[in-house]
Image 1 (cartoon, one colour):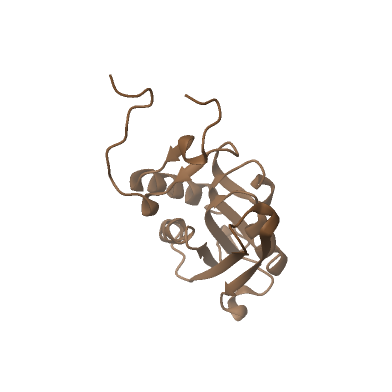
Image 2: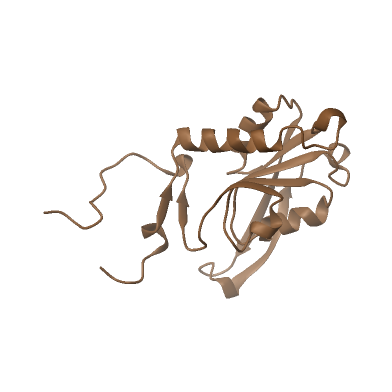
Length: 174
């Protein structure tokens, strides 16, 4: 086997059960930590698309009824190589009256990788609290709260991106 692996070969497969448990753990960590009376949060904003599932679970666990979303798109030219990336931009913003400067807002994503998406959103809502289920080292500093740290070269397979199929054993067949 080659010493260098493709990103999908160092995979961390997350099941529906696992994302549910980890998002609940995120909610427990955030419980009572908001700036409102009794540590409440004003609203949960999920970063589309991956942040919608954990945002829903967090909002349910913390009984937060005000839920919105924000969508950020990184535009790529050519093959999407790092040197061809253009600036990311918000293509769907949450309700501006709700958001203000972000005070009392819990912004949730499934994963912080490079941190660029959270950095952009933090610039818009500097007082918001940024929470992720999973974090890679390059992006950890952009997340105020996260549950699980994974290496930068780990590729996370989320359940909404997968289908069940046969996989060869790691060392091959007999």
